[in-house]
Image (cartoon, rainbow, N blue to C red; front, side, top):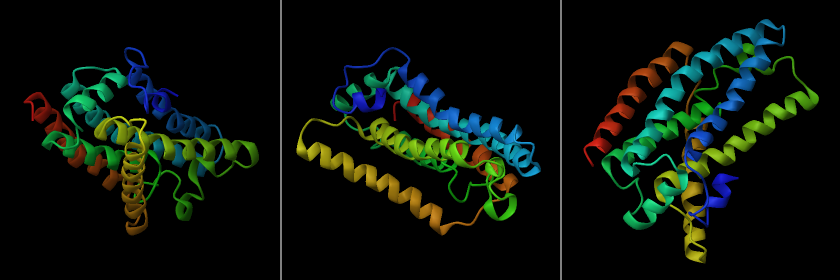
Length: 224
């Protein structure tokens, strides 16, 4: 609701609302871990352990990307970030912004459970992993949370790095084009990459994305 209200009115929100958004974005992964661990299935247990390892990896990169934005704007209020960009321009058009956006996109790919990071569910290996023993309403809730994340995360990325949406036709169309561009990137990565092994994914986020995220934070501290 914070994101939707902030689309056309950057004055809404409260201090620390960005922290709340980050916290809420981790709940589907936590629910998946708990659900898999409590399913009494070996596939569920393995999937839950994989998901736990992945969360500890991609969340670090995700937080570094968000930290870059916080450092540049000097605020943890989501609506302050939108107001800042309406005055100074989109954050993505800077060295630190480009790096942070790339890190955020990779982290989003993992948070959504898309290839090459669908390691915890891995249908061909674990028959769905944490979801192996679920059906009906229980399975629908997990799938619904993933669908909501597929809407929430791209919108969040566009607002954090491209700025707010004005109540004009051109601005709304521009927002839709930016949102579609983010979705296309996520889907292209999904359909063109094979699943990574767990150790490869952990190395990718802890080393490559971690270093890139730290570099983006340093550039933001230097004002670049």
